[in-house]
Image (cartoon, rainbow, N blue to C red; front, side, top):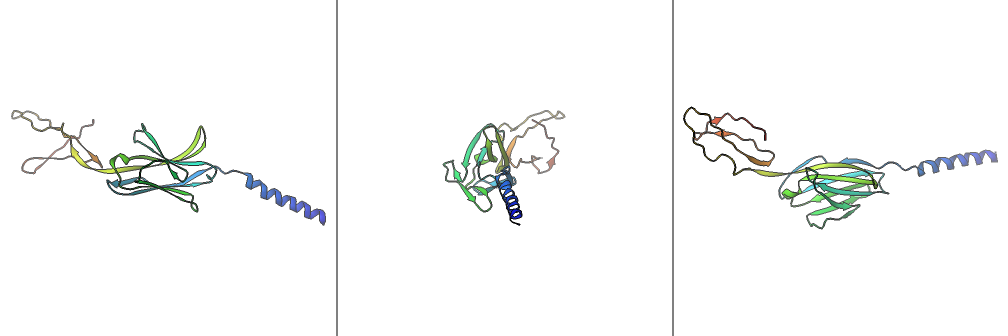
Length: 184
């Protein structure tokens, strides 16, 4: 009987020690979906991670064309010295929430939540922040045009804004004209 108790105890120790030593791979379990906000508004971007307590977690901003990268935070600390930005870390849900107040046009871009595994390996998830901009008709649009009767006339209108504005043409009497969109 005494020998049987020792074997059972040895088996129990083996079961307890085995799983505790196994390191699970870090995972990003949630990230906020794409955001569209007005200038002057506030946005919160949340990233929840699992099994990442031994790793470094960062918020990074890149431009839409990926040409420019700025590190915003590391762990639960904000790196960027901008009072419009703040970071909250919730220990119970292991989530990192980046808040941006008084949103500016330049805040638009791709925000990445990264877990750095090694010098050459990381996992990341990203969320796009788009900032609404009122439509503006560019100065290089057709201002005036003189043509002879019966000749074709081509008028061009260039506009920008977010969301991308729809362009329509009207006569002076407010009648809508057919519009052909040309790719640039």
